[in-house]
Each structure stands twice: as C-alpha cells, then as structure tokens.
Amino acid sequence: MHSVEKLFIFNNEIKLEAEVFQIKKETLSCVALMCHPHPQFFRV
Amino acid sequence: MHNNVVSCVFNSFVKNDISCMRFNFRGVGNSTGNHTSGKGELSDVKACIDHLTRILHFDRIFICGYSYGAAIGCSTINYSEKIIGYCAISFPWDFMGIEYKEFSQSKSPKLFIQGDMDTVAPYENFMKHYNYYLEPKKFKIIKGANHFYQGFEDDISREVKSFYESILT
Image 1 (cartoon, each protein chain N blue to C red):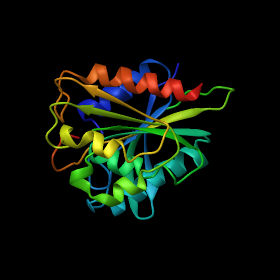
Image 2 (spheres, each protein chain N blue to C red):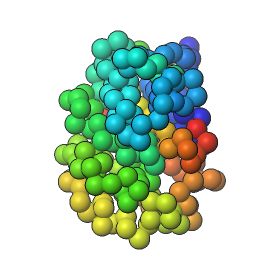
Image 3 (cartoon, helix red, strand yellow):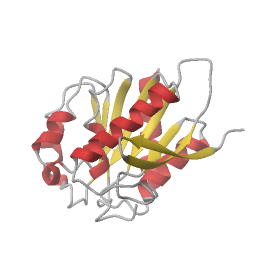
C-alpha cells in the first residue's frame, strides 16, 4: 500500500512544499513532476 | 499545486500507481520566499528534479506543466539527461516571452495540449508556436475548453497518462 507523502524540498534558503507518491519497482523507475499555473491568476 | 488541472492529473497518476510529485513554487501555499516571475521558479523545478534523482533515486523524470507551470517546467527539459519528455498544457508562449520557447526546445518527446476556446494562450497562435518545435512531438486540441479547463479535467488526465505510457515503451 502506497500513500501520498508530504515533504519539503530545499532550494538554498527557499523551502518548497511538495507531495510525492512513490511506487518502488525493481525495473527502472520513472516519476511525473507536476508544475502548477501562475499563483496570481489561478487558484493553486 | 491544488489547482483543478494539476490535481486531476496528479490524482489520476496516483490512482494508476504511477509515481508522481507536485509542489508549490516559492511564495505559494506553505513554500517560503516570494514570486520572482520565472528565474527563481526555474531553480525551484531544478531543485525538485535534483531531489527526485539524488534523494529518491528515480532514473527517469517526465515533466507536466500547466500554463505558467508549462513554461517554467518544460524549460528545464535540458537540465538533466534523466528527463525523458514533457507535456505542456496551454503553454502561454505569447504571455511569457521568447526565452521560454527557446528553453523548452528539445529532441525529447513532447505533448502539447490546447483548448480551442483559450484566449490566455490564444488558440489561433497555437500552430505557429507548435511548428517551432523539433520532432518527436504531438498535440491534442480539447474542443470547447478555455484556459481553465473546467469540466475537461478528465480528458486532460487521459491524454497525459496515455502519452506518459507511450514514451515509456
């Protein structure tokens, strides 16, 4: 059973809020990285 | 990262047991810092890519971005050899400027999704911008959709997942 994990990623002095869902497989693993729209014009 | 389009694609990946990550750019939600109109946000994406490859040990990364997130996210395509391709949903070429079009040029597989009622990333300019990109590339026009894709989230999720699976094989 896998679940979405909440974490912070550090970019120098900046702390980025993130969620990751990780499936572990023996084969080469691939992940999709999602980037949200502009925060001033969208509900993000 | 809780936008309707981002959430629908993310949840679709989770539902289908596909590893995925979403995050908030600097200055959004609980991310610290302030919005920088691009430069800082590009480094935010690169920090996430580094985390995925160095900390979580993923071997391949597929980038999916929506609107501003497409311009920023897809502009990191050449940052790492582990990035295998991208999907850009309503890439705002006219809004963001030429540099993001150049940054996102690549010989890796690319999917562009566009609504035919979109006036923020104008539909009438779509093919002009699309034709700039090298193969391999595909596009999907969502009929009746504007820039916000309300009611079309499932259509987008299906397209993104199908493309993702196609480039893995």
